Length: 208
Image (cartoon, rainbow, N blue to C red; front, side, top):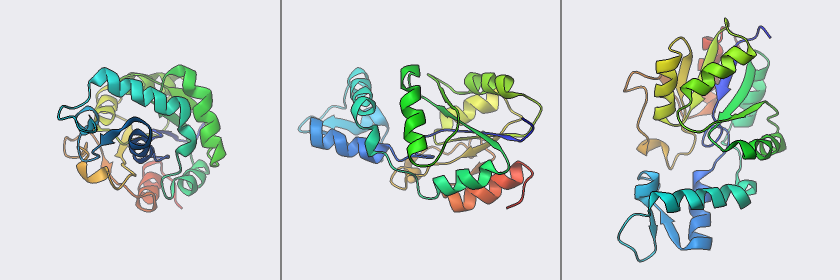
């Protein structure tokens, strides 16, 4: 395929996740999640002064994806953005979920009208992105979109020629997220799809 390649994250880019995780923690587990803090630091059992142990955090996160993916709804404008961009680019999703959740994520995205290949990954996304580009064909413009600065930085290190958009679609989280643009790892920080689409069109050499 000769179209440019867009490799995008899912949670907080295409789908809202953290607010649903927060609500489920409170409803089912008596755990409060402060979205202004980091995950482990922001999670506390009600009545406890100490943050939750990291191992317990991961157990609860696994439990959410085991049973609650149906709660997730689209980031405003995401479905329309993917439809508009798909006329000009090949789109794939690179999500940090275990590989056994790949089919669940594919079905989840299809359910909201986003039917694209899904790659699962663990850890920094730079190496995974590089493998995707080799598999799907190099030598064409490529853009990476993610809500976490660590993954933007990983791609900047491994594939510096790839355009990088730092996008945090959840307004309760965006103001408290470390900005990859400030570190020089992102080419832009945009948190609204209405603003992101024109920027992405320009990066892939297309017009709306």
